[in-house]
Amino acid sequence: MSALRELYQEVILDHNKSPRNFRRMEKPDRKVEGYNPLCGDHYTIFLKLENDIIKDICFEGAGCAISKASASVMSSLVKGKTKAEAEMLFNSFHRLVTGESDGVEEIEKLGKLAAFSGVSEFPARVKCASLAWHTLHAALASNEHRVSTE
Amino acid sequence: MRPAHDMLTPVTIEKSFDVDRIRTEFPILKQRVNGKPLAYLDNAATSQKPQVVIDAMNRYYLEENSNIHRGVHFLSDKATQSYEAARKKIQRFINAASHKEIIFVRGTTEAINLVAQSYGRKYFHAGDEMIISAMEHHSNIVPWQMICEEKGLTLRVIPMNDKGELFIDKFETMLNPKTKFVAVVHVSNALGTINPVQQIIEIAHRRGVPVIVDGAQAVPHMKVDVRDLDCDFYAFSAHKMYGPTGVGVLYGKQHLLEAMPPYQGGGDMIKSVTYAKTTYNDLPNKFEAGTPNIVGGVGLGATIDFMNTLDFEAATAHEHELLEYATEVLTTIKGLRIIGTAREKASVVSFVLEGIHPHDIGTILDDDGIAIRTGHHCAQPVMQCFGIPATARASFAMYNTKEEIDALVKGIYKVIEVFS
Image (cartoon, rainbow over all chains, first blue to last red; front, side):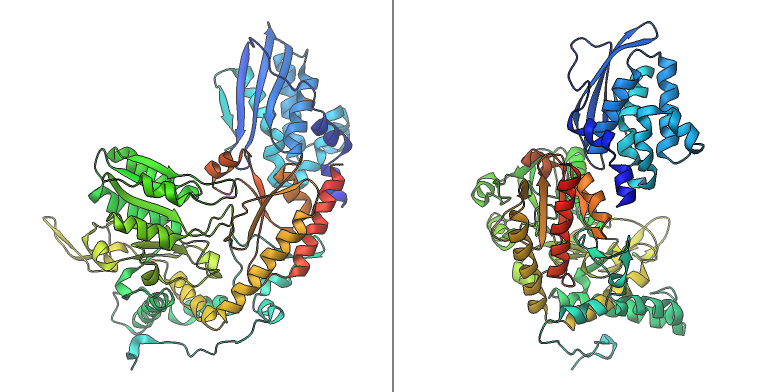
């Protein structure tokens, strides 16, 4: 059960059970839907921006534990960050879940995000973990209103 | 007397059903996954293949490989005979009136597209209507949406109740002089419901409306007799009935197929070609443009030989026992809800667990070597009907056992524990 325990770490189970920033936002600056047609995971991300800073972020929708926990952890990490910082986090996260991180040190720097290190052992679940991040990326670029993992 | 080219394999029908012996015919089942014995419960997605089918396909490539219907040489003749013998085996297997009514296609999806594009293009007109059901697979929705959009038809949907049973009386009232066609699934892949297709066909025929039946999930699990059903078209895939992927069958009544224009143009479907005019070939070749999946056809022939050695009734009874057992034990799990509880069901159990997404169920079960399907099962409208995004689905074949269902139940308790 070790690979499985690596995947469903306490942080993930906790954020799945009680997702942070799980609500709608009235009058958001940006609102983008993210959708995984393979499993039906579906989230909407709402952003409040001030210049280059993510003043507020929240999300709603439904999906598996990995996708929901990922959206929740992401929302708590990027709040107050600049767009560029958020993009850098996305980059590190992507390297983590696809197994490309450079050793333990890089992973340790990721803090709470490190909880998703087990995902790389489950290629079918990488899309679940990245859905919210792709959606955030699209929201920041703001040229799309709906992104899909396919 | 049988004609010489008929090549019927002598058949010894097994009179009882011995699941342990059946399992030995399927080498892949011996595998261990993550250190646990594989419990393959994803048969509605695709079934496993017996050694005899694998051998027949190997033998074709080792001893017979050549192109069919063209060559004058020894191998071409042999390959043609094997391929055409397979067509006749299929004809007998589903009791079609003629081998000309058996069209080889890539699978159920292509069979339905063929009818939509060929029959639809000729007979559908703006303002017409056609009817499908609320439990269709995307492959029996999208091809019809495409032709309906092109031709200006209205697509109507037979509703179902919360058990997953169609309202046949509503279907009756939907038929009207504008109705041109009915497309309905025999056995639902997402719910397991066995639809009363014979009754549906009879009702449609009273109004002179032809019917195509999507039989992808039916053919592996029940005896299908197309003349008894009186369906106009019947589509199925080899890979769900213990045969290879990439090959399937469209059955169509001869007079309908004859009146239909070709689906694709190319070699083999013509009699003569000039720049001024091309004369199309006779049935079934008219619908088989290009070099087909010859080894697939041969493999499907071998699959039917294999199925003919079984006591099909006993195999079906075994599957039904598995369904009843699984339904009974799964129902005892707190928070588990079975989606699809029709009175007439094939061996498919779709379920959801309160507060736990099917994707997570699938990953945790896989850790114990249990293979199930999770997701919308290419039937998003069915999921919408039940107000859920996805289900977990266990689907059984004749080689499955009660022990595997016990492993599934144990696995589900582990899922619940992880999320508790």
